[in-house]
Image (cartoon, rainbow, N blue to C red; front, top):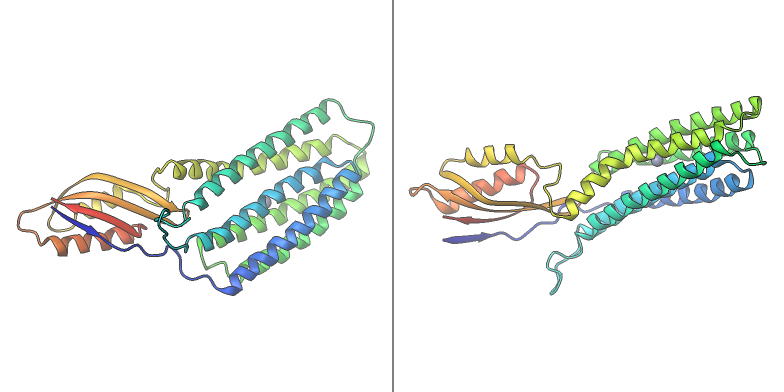
Length: 292
Ligand SMILES: [Zn+2]
């Protein structure tokens, strides 16, 4: 029986100072907008604005997480943390997703109460439109900055698309502000607020599912076990694969361990090297193989 251990690589390429700076600028820009939006929301009794401030707060968490993940994915091994702190990116992701659900559900609850029992203070439609217009501009700037580096990695592409989608949400908010101003229908405010919260819940569901799965060492959705097994079994000399384990090391890096049952005539080193190369093309950087 022989063991092949290969030294693991870092999951991501070195991240450029440019990309880091773009994330920092976008995070600061949106954080400033959140402060403005929440202040306007409470001042003008507009649930739509409070609800969206909650939504953007989550976006800032998610942008920060992406930035932190770039850094965590290159942390070095140490005596009692042999994988570095890479897995922390998964835990942060799960925490973030749970937080989003709590905030969204709270907002929906508050909004329903407002629909059933509207207060004496009517929301200011004009304030909603003006604030949302500022939000539209802020998101367009953020989307433009992210678009400069959107081909860097899947996270940045996702953030770019998300920011564009949010810009559209602001167009809708500007319009609903005008409708509230013209018609005086206060109920539009909590209804829009519920729609925003539902939109957020819809967007976070896949993140929640994936980060939960990754936190209990399930196979990340980027890895297709069936295809991987087919490809490994197709390597000449491999008779069977057993004791297969696939788990995430961080949100951007995976590991695999397995026992390969080889043909008696097979060159163990050559077959193992080929299998490792095949596994790498399936998105798994670290493989630990035992041959039999
Ligand atoms: Zn968003």
